[in-house]
Structure formats: C-alpha cells, structure tokens
Image (cartoon, rainbow over all chains, first blue to last red):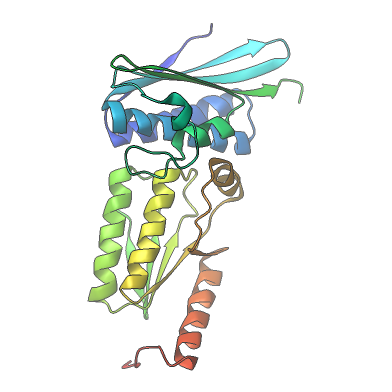
Amino acid sequence: MAEELLIPIAADTDVVTARQRGRDLAAEAGFSSGDQTVIAAAISEIARNILMYAKRGEVALSVVTNGDRQGVVVVARDQGPGIRDPERALEDGYSTSGGLGLGLPGARRLMDDFNLDSSVGKGTTVTMKKWRRMNA
Amino acid sequence: MEVPILKQGHYLIASIQSALTDADLSQLREALIERVGRFRARGVIVDVTALDVMDSFAVRTLRDIAHMARLRGAETVIVGIQPEVAFAMVQLGLTLKGVSTALDLEEGLLFLDHQAQLRIERGTGRIDRG
C-alpha cells in the first residue's frame, strides 16, 4: 500500500482541506478533471458526515495500482455513534440530521467501489475507490 | 472567506472567489437576505464560476437563498456552474429544482431583466421609484 495522506476532520475548514487534497492526489495520479471533481465531491460528503454525526474523525487518502488500473482510495473513519440502519442510510433522501439525505448514497454513485462499515456505539468507516485505466 | 456582494442597479451580485466552508456559505445566505431588504433589491445573482465542487450543503444553501430571497420579493439566479461540477451534482442527485440558473453573469442579468419585465406586465411588479 502506498503512503497515506491523513486529514483530521474536526471543523468545516477540514472538509474543504480534505476535498482539495483529494483533488490534488487524483490530479497527480492522472485522473481527468471531471473525475477529480467527482472524487472531491464524494470526499466532501463523507467528511461532512463525520463532522455532523461524530464531531471528529479522519479521512485517509492513497493511490493504489491493480493491474493496469490505478485507483484513488478514500477511507473516512470516526469513533462516533455509528449508523443504526446502514441500509436506510444509503437510501436517497433518508437523513437523521435534517440534511438532504444525499451524502452517502450520492458518494456511492460518484465512486466505483463503496463500502460502509458501521457499528452502533463504536463508529463508522466508509471506504471508497475511483479507478482509471492507466493506458487510457 | 467572506464573499463580496456588489450592488448593481436593482440587483445584488455575490461573486464567489474561492472554496467556501459551510460557515462561509451560511454567512453568505444571511448577508444576501439582509441586503435584499436594505437595498430593496429585486434580483440576486450568485456567481459560482470559481467553485470547483458543489456538494449537498452548498446546493441546499443556494436553494435556501433563492427561496428566502423570493419570500423577500427578489428573484435569484445561480450562474457559472462548471461542466464537471454539473456532472458531479447530477450524480449526487442535486438538481437545484425550483432555482433559476444561467450560463454566466451576462445571461443571469438578462434573465433578471426579463423576469422584471414579466412582473410589470402581469401588474405584480413594484412601482419603480428610480
């Protein structure tokens, strides 16, 4: 695994930092500007979720290679209250915070791989990846 | 980072210059709604050309600005959404339904002029004291 870029999330400025770092990393890895925007938007959503539900946590960014594919990996972790109903949390329009309820399902649509791991009282980890073909 | 708000005729133009935090966006909303009253503005343009990401909070805030301004008697138009930003917004499911948009500042001004004309024709426009 390549080196990880860790961004602590504890304030709304950290959300901006996380998505900017994600965009930069995607640009360095050769992703198109469209994909950079998509990755930045997905990071923004999950980083805000950390702030809103867990108050603090972190976003880890890295680049991986898999055959002829290169991927940006985003891991968002917190030790917050966890998600009681992960299935519903991934449905459009479901929110327990009065938001639009598009954060998690939206981020899932934006990325290629998406995994939500949460246990009540322990915290939540979202792992998501965006891939590109290296010869493309 | 505070967003500068310019007054041009009956319109307010908020020109976003750099990435905004959630607090910056909320501050912009409060400032615009207050100035609609202070300057008796009939139109609000929010120029988002410089925004390289629009997530659900940004979209919700822009929608709130448009709806609140309308309740205060002003039409809002969002201008300058970049192609990549539009793509990511649609993927996220953020459509800005019920909010007017235009390609750029010029088109936004034309749109507001047109809206004002329609209001006068319908007899719902305010009396022009200017």
